[in-house]
Length: 230
Image 1 (cartoon, rainbow, N blue to C red):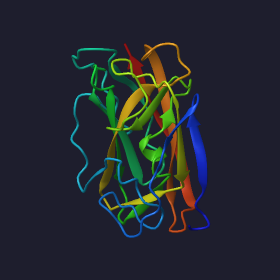
Image 2: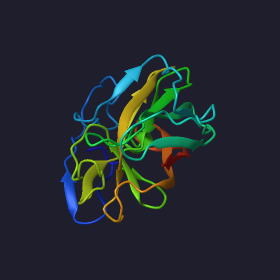
Image 3: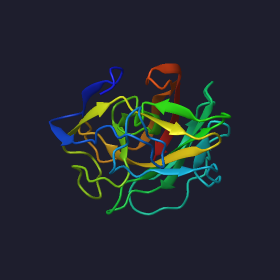
Image 4: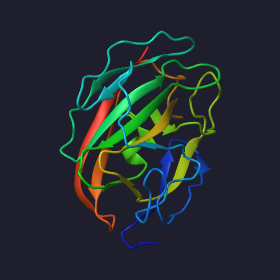
């Protein structure tokens, strides 16, 4: 393990439900993971040399979030209500609602996108946090988890009934010049809440860092967005 990489245990509420994460992988995959720490092979990733098209419910740091809630069925629906300005970094983040309403089969779903504005490849970290994986809202009532995973939550409620503990390393991945990295994240209520998916407005925020080959942050900015569940 590289001496600059850290390993720790994160717990999201209550008794821990342990999720094992893959270790470092050499080389590079489609999302640009390399020496700075490999991606979890079970985590869906997407990469593209072209930024994603603007769609209803996408909020980019360079544009206002859509205030239109798509028609949905089932449980509470998600609307983007605020998106921060672009960070002073060579990467532009965006968040998109891809599954607006909770259903008996799936919780609400979002998609995070990081698009490079640099003229050469850049490395960003921490590899999960930059895509809001395992990030809770400011009040600790909701959490975003990697899309498509199996978590200890009741269908049609989507509140975790066990805490989630994850062992992590400080991971980085590379984005090609002008390229992008995208991942799906699903919305769950934390075990500490009393309701399933509680209605209200919630803010999510994370740190995005451009890092060196030694996985040391060279520049970092906080960036976030707010959603409305109703």
